[in-house]
Length: 266
Image 1: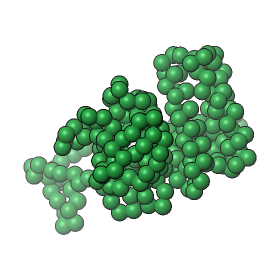
Image 2: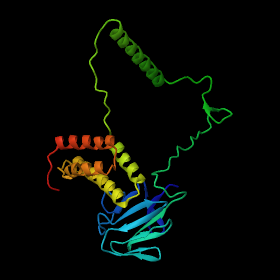
Image 3: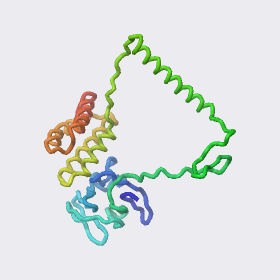
Image 4: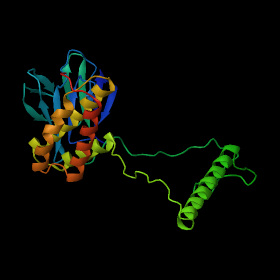
């Protein structure tokens, strides 16, 4: 299975968090990569960093935690091996699980196998399902087919109008807007390529600011996170931590958010 952190309730697994980036945040904050519902814990308890096939745990608190048979002191770091438990409190424990190269690849990509109940369906020699000869497409399928044919005819009519009749159609904006998910994915990809902890943490900070800014925006609350991102962009460009296109996407996001909201003090 891909790398993941398990939240344990005694010997039972309470929650499972797939690791998707080179640096993951562990804490009680709802936006943490490993979000633990425990009000006694800090918003950010630790950073889990993947590098060269191993995971390093960086304690971000002033407290000492139990890591397997050893301890993890305040503001200290230690290697976290798979199957070793991290005890954060009397009733909160985590366990790292991973196989193969331990790389954080997110949820498993397994489309699964479609099962059939063995009714009147027929199966070819290669195991693929086919319809009986007397089974016809449903009415809804026929309607979809007719709709597709109609769209094709409309497109042909448009081409004829433009090419032969000289009719000008209104121009359309074909520029595709980049989604938040795509921006976050590009940041994760760059973080996985970096070998410097400082660079990885800077990219993680950028991703955290974007997440918090979007969270505040969805709650209808003004935020200072976008101006902070704006100040980071020249540094990211100078250090070449993101490509020009990726920085342009972040700039476009920040610009649109600043236009639609008035920053207030968090």
